[in-house]
Amino acid sequence: MALLCAGFALPAPATPPLVDRFILGSNKGHIVPSECCWMPVPESMRLLDLKVNEGSQCSAMGGPVGVFEQKAGKLWLTGFETCGRKIPLDEVYPGLEEPALADWLSGTFKTRLGVPCRAFGGQPVLALEQELTVNEGVVTAVTEKYLNHSACRNHSE
Image 1 (tube, one colour):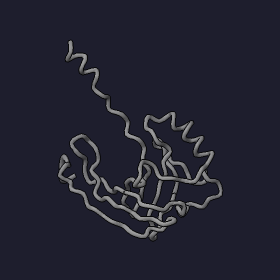
Image 2 (tube, helix red, strand yellow):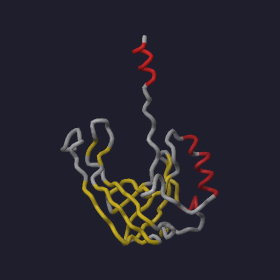
Image 3 (spheres, helix red, strand yellow):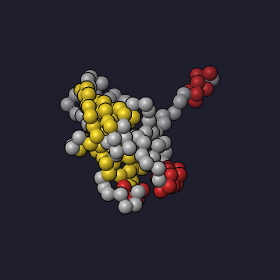
Image 4 (cartoon, one colour):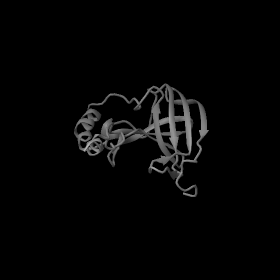
């Protein structure tokens, strides 16, 4: 009986939180501030409304999240996503041109890019990790680290 009860005490797998998207050329991945969690964006009542109304329909915490692109040495906000829905930038910030230079961002940010294979648990093993130093949306330094893929189920994936 004790073993049976112990089985019920195990934590159930949870839906991973949504993270901000990152695009660099043809590579896609995620971006987070060095301090933690989600990329800061300018305040918007529409974004708050989306978090409350559409966020409650999603099993993952954190949506909607920003979609950022590094292009021409700068970080750009190109839109938002939540639980499979793409949200155009002008839906959140009417009149703002897309893409918008993320000139409110300064500091260090970590990215992970590419999905060459999956680990034994099914989690993606990403190819490249970066640390970006940004000053008012301009990328001033990039440190890159290519990741070891020994965790891959099948190295040819």
